[in-house]
Image (cartoon, rainbow, N blue to C red; front, side, top):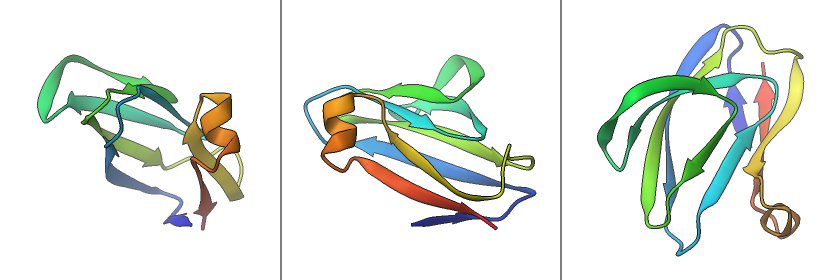
Length: 94
């Protein structure tokens, strides 16, 4: 489980060590995607889903300053069969 302090920002590097694309999605908040595979993204943008390239990574800044709800939420791959097989993590907004 990931813990997120309400009112904070966190830097996350989302790494994909597989040979498949993974559209990673977070509930309740948004994040600023600013780098892919260590290189700056030309136009960083606020998202709730980002495609993490196979064998690559995406750097994001998670904005936990104003989550829609407090308590438990999730971060997961948006491919249903991946989500069903456990590619999901709980996030506790504290």
